[in-house]
Length: 314
Image 1 (cartoon, helix red, strand yellow):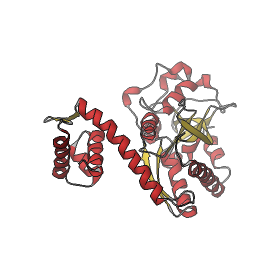
Image 2 (cartoon, rainbow, N blue to C red):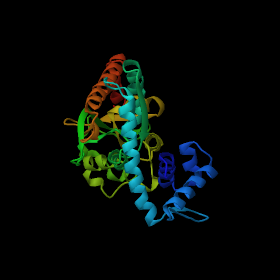
Image 3 (tube, rainbow, N blue to C red):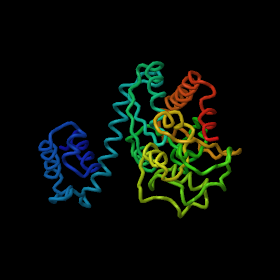
Image 4 (tube, one colour):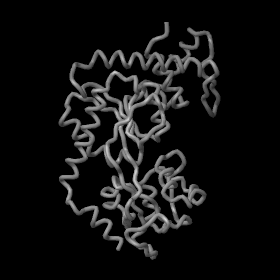
């Protein structure tokens, strides 16, 4: 009989396509994981994995088994979670995905607040681009995600957390003089730096700077806001920065922040969960906790901090 443990080992291998990385993910040795996969193959009478010297691939049967395995594991996770949870909200394990342009700036405020106000919660975080998080949410590997909304999927529910305004970030030594506040037409598409494909902030930047659709320095392949702003600070161009990131990034990178004229471009960040989830009360409580954590953090900051950052561009 195939065990739940073997299914988890197989899913780890299917996710990483690497025996060593899969073994690390499930905290066993590589030979032990390999032996368990071979035992699965023997029991099922099919090859699940194609092994070569340079790569590991799933066979067609392996892909089919993976789909069933993930369905079983999601059901087991729900069973275990139901057994752990009491009648209270925000208790037990909560698996939360967050997009990369939000996670570094929200997590340091959110997690301490949740631990203090909801000590029985166990938070498991994953950072990835929106499409990957939505896939994990749909397959039950995540309970909720924090991402830019709206999301055009009937199978999910979204609750707004906050509106995040965009600003323009430039090198502190940039010789260009931009009006402050600036308009979208002042953006030089030849100098606009964007995150690599797959990041929703890339698409949001292109929607703000419509003339730049074919004018991005994609070859740099920046995968994080921090990397992008390092490029900006070295006078390699300019980029959009969300308000959420300004406090952290201006503290460690010499950049100039220029605000947009009203109505300033922005994005809406929301909490998204499966419509079929039985944890709606938890999701509502989580959303309120995230909002409260930001409000408390803002109350501790000097009220004119962002104004000073923007004024430094003048």
